[in-house]
Length: 266
Length: 266
DNA sequence: GATCAATGTCCGAAATATCGGATTATCGCT
DNA sequence: AGCGATAATCCGATATTTCGGACATTGATC
Picture 1 (cartoon, protein in one colour):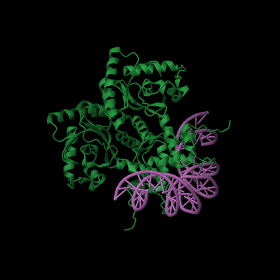
Picture 2 (cartoon, helix red, strand yellow):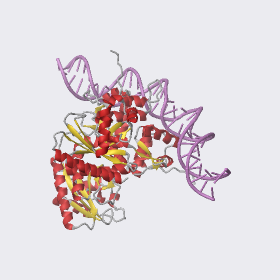
Picture 3 (cartoon, chains in turn blue, yellow, brown, green):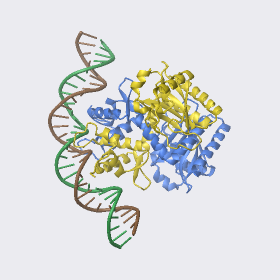
Picture 4 (cartoon, protein in one colour):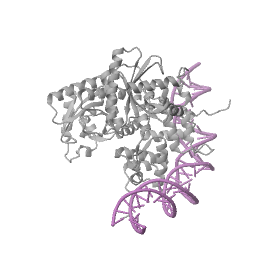
């Protein structure tokens, strides 16, 4: 078996306009490296980074040294793995504070998680994918790892049904890749069902789904709308499917309330 | 007047090992750029970035394009300024979640800010400087901009008196630069006073200061200690100096409680 | 203790990314 | 509209950084 290189998408991106020689700019290598760590969501050894991003080993060592010095990365434990460093948190905070809607959303999400005690999130679209922008775990200590900044197919989520609110059937078909209607377990969401969910959600001012991405989880979401009434974000709760119905209704009210405040603030 | 270049420290760092020609690696330029934006805490125009970091204009344009594409930066408004982009938030979240103490501290800080309604922070040392790692604004809407990740002289802060808890007078003299004992308004903190504060704080299990960095602000902090009893972080409140005394006592109790939990968790 | 694997360092050559400066586009103001 | 100033793009040359591969180091296994 030849020493074929298996690169992930980040590597592909990084190569970008690179000529056939395989030589790339340091900055492109670094971007691939960081995207790789983000997708991994765990510290990685340098040799593995080199293999998985298609970057020469000596180059990775060189760059990692630079990045560790700048605190962009941190070497973990004594096992020689590296992961994001504090500088990323500082820059990330600056970003959050600089975006008005997100700064306000943070207050709401924190408030909801604190008062209700369940995991609350703030979600938006990124291109034709859904992603969690803010995540505040509830008192329950399961689901430790947040999936902040990880792209997910729109139909897999409750919020997704609100976020494409403003589109007609044709637009949606053109916007969401067909394969995204297939759930992780292989089941397929038929378009009519999705469109019906959508209409019902717009009508009711919230949406609830159960057992979409995983069988035992219920998701409730309320829309944040701009002045034109377009859904630009959602606030939602992620709870066990067996959560008491009254409790769920209280949560939906809380969501509508918070989402309303953020819609006003626009 | 000659076209003398005024570079900030980041630029100096970036030049690093650069040879006398002034040519530098792209990655070093990028690090300087990001540090510059962080210090600025506001969007900047490309021309200004070039001037302030000592990077050639054409290089900055080139790099900014790359970074915008990677969502590390974002062009703001229509005024052509750039600032941090969402990718920084995602990487920063990954960092926060990967550090056990910080992840737990976030819950406490959010809880305190929510329940008490005043600005709560989680602080640590970075070298011989103090810095805010987590900041959660209270209900009061003043002091919008958080100073997350900005280094501050240790003697300027309440928490600082706890964080060097474990050092003797000589150690402290060697550790904290003398100029750091001079407050922003020019007043000087005499060492004896600092040492007395420190001893009293360790005794009481908390520290309170008023009018240090600015005349109308009171700071209260409680120590997070590791298994050896060493103060590795603090949790604190930042409130107006005229805050009711009973209220302040309640806040100190809440701080001690949270700090205690984090100390246990080690 | 010897062997093998994995990790990290070093170095020269060549491909190319950075840089300066000139050019073009955009904007604000009278 | 015309003008000046500022912002952004373009382009060729060369100083430099990436890259491959050899070498050193560490550590685990038998």
